[in-house]
Length: 150
Image 1 (cartoon, one colour):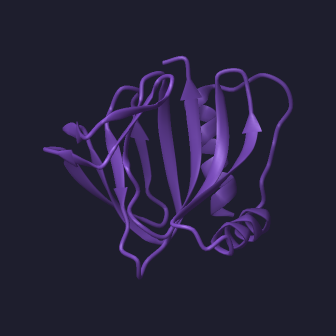
Image 2 (tube, one colour):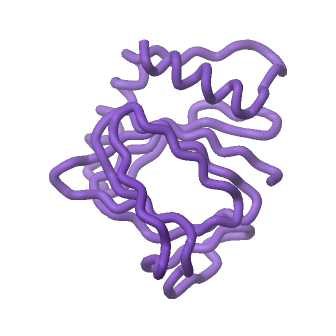
């Protein structure tokens, strides 16, 4: 039931209002999470739906990822299971262009740490460096809304 609430919040955040309604049941998201976990990689994700100014995905992470910055996309993460610490702001270390509009780096210096657990939501504006730190004993799964054109 909480996944449907997450989707409702996401819809309100991005003011979708166009086209039909998409619902991803808790059972469907749990199945997708298990499929992502079976890939046995530090990070796996699956795009779910694309809309005019945003898209959704499900992400599963078993280890700390690179730092990143999206020049034209805001991120909204809904933690559906597990826990992590996310560092936001500060300066990216060893930043390089991954693709147009997206930078990646090895870490962040001087950022703010936010502990996240199941049920927590975080909004990361476009242009904000961020990095998810994951304890290998506690994988994290999160529903993502990426808002484009920021």
